[in-house]
Image (cartoon, rainbow, N blue to C red):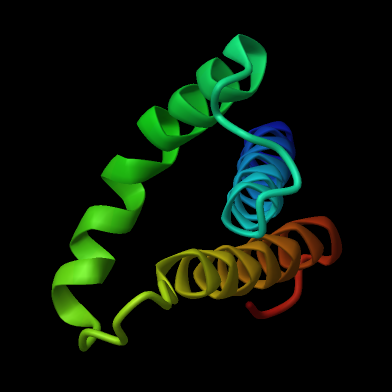
Length: 100
């Protein structure tokens, strides 16, 4: 059971980094630090958007429209942090035999 929790935590860490890289890259593109005319930047940005869009879409439907600001990555990161806390407590509970 602990191994499954550890695998889930590693997957959450990987997803967290994917979202952070996507946020930073979108900010760099928005402030014209890097441009999408570069094939590598464009492909990386499209790949990250392809990965993250299915996660963001349901959240965007719930959140109100803030114009150009997109808070769905922040909501996903917050939810992932909460899930990680739950997984940590579950692992400690399993190891110590105590209550969850």
